[in-house]
Image (cartoon, rainbow, N blue to C red; front, side, top):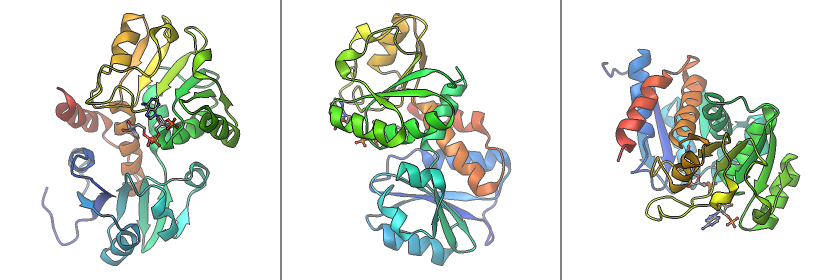
Length: 271
Ligand code: NAP
């Protein structure tokens, strides 16, 4: 692909972003889809300046990552309904200088689950009550699932459940067989603390679908134990790929080349 004076530019803004796999994944997507576009990473602590820069330079779209998912909202022209309800933006679409904020995190997780099981009507246990949990619970509700939230700080689970029309459960109430699907949204088990698990093994039951949104490592202790207990396991690359695929479609109006995006992510996460 040749980069010309007309090549649309996309980016990720965050702080830090040096570790982000989004540039590799999105540039592979543009190439695989035969779509003119390049995607760069900008490490910035200044969301207001970043929004002004996107407008001034005609950057067509951006991914927004930690710590700007909430702060960027003040500097956009429009926030779509689901991002407003989630209270965070992970995607900016620039239409002729008008910046619209969207959130693809939760739908990305539901698509990753959807490759394995339809979430509609299913009892889904969400571990954690932070930003990722909020986006995922919102998307689960929108897709007809019945979400339950368990968190180390129970009060946060209660408030999140109340806000999104879900239910809160105490960590002590979790037992294998009560839920169809479990999703870990806590960082427990992430590198370098890979020997930790967010729930005891007794919370796992054969036939359950267990997704960990951690992708560093891809195979967390939770997924290893879940597989040994006869559960179906889904790693964190799926959510990452699908949130990016949804961004690609928002920016280009085209279906994303999901297989190629997944391949480049796996190439860089296999260790
Ligand atoms: P966050 O807003 O900081 O929330 C973290 C949640 O985990 C909180 O509910 C917190 O509980 C809980 N937690 C933290 N440390 C814990 C511990 N030691 N034991 C038990 N619970 C603990 O973080 P986030 O933005 O939701 O992100 C969470 C994770 O998701 C990160 O690992 C991130 O890398 C991953 N993620 C993956 C994707 C993907 O595409 N795969 C996308 C987004 C995020 P308290 O309320 O008690 O503090």
